[in-house]
Length: 183
Length: 100
Image (tube, each protein chain N blue to C red):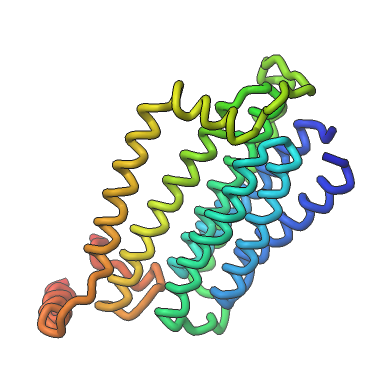
């Protein structure tokens, strides 16, 4: 990967990540997130992780983010009018972020990881062939468990988002009103 | 070839921005997006280290992280829709029913 491309993508992904956190309109946050995901996908491809890079662009930036967008539109969220939340929380968040950044700066220095790095890749590195060889031999059990996880997630999502009848909704509202009155 | 240090620094920066967003934003959907940012920062670290070590394991783990993130997004968004239907809010501070 050329150095110029890396710096462009790094600046783009950090700016877009800041956009996710700082913008008021949820749709704009989501579009900034898509931009971050695409920049990271190109970074993947630049490091010969070609299949994973395309999966990132298609599955993550494509499918998962469209799901987010549908939910934002479905809920018809208003734009936040001003800064929300407690000031103390923001202060705590800033402190925690600074502490975490310092910690990562100390621990993520590659020379401390004591690993043997090589700069050249074997032929076919990152191809769909190499990925599936590893996935279906070493990680076969994890792969099968993942399929169960996806099945459970589908059933759970349908059960949770199922349209409730008016009577059930009324009952739920009464129950939460009772709890609030008791509190 | 870009040095590994810069890739790890970029990954750390994106992760930290995600943590900051999760701690300071109160809109549940934006908190969710911050979680996605953190997951992607970790993915970037996995791919960079795997690429320098010349193994495919990092990329396989990224594959699993993507699957778990998709499952998490599906279930989490279903929960958000369900909450919005009965409470009509996505503001995390309004959902204090379990708070003692």
